[in-house]
Image (cartoon, rainbow, N blue to C red; front, top):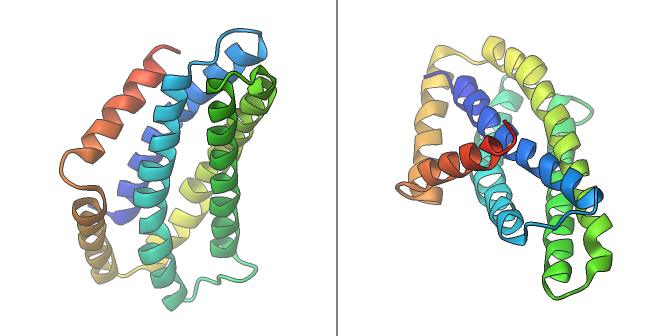
Length: 183
């Protein structure tokens, strides 16, 4: 399978969870209860599926290979993507911190939670759009067939070594579950 197709598919899974994050943000902003259990599962998803698995494939494998093929990092699309990955991590930390405060009874963190959920969803949706429609198009042109085979194999290795058997499937199920309540 083409490595950018693998990443695009993972983007669809991430977008499902972002849909759930937006739903929770609306609920909290409207005065409803913060579903801390689901938010904690989202934080786990964002840290492990989105960052440790998906972003790792991009940062450790795809981006360096694209640089070797002449796609610029500094001032170019790779640099923008890396900056947005860091900004996303900051939003996830803010989500986790606000959820922890709410769990310990600090209801004043509700606005911060809703804001962080919305900010992360907005950032990542735009980020995914740029990757799918700009960077991955560039990658499909720049990478050789051998590069694509090498990357796909390396992606499978990340799945096996970083995530472990069944983890990817568990996160996919969670994504469908959390988005399902918004359909």
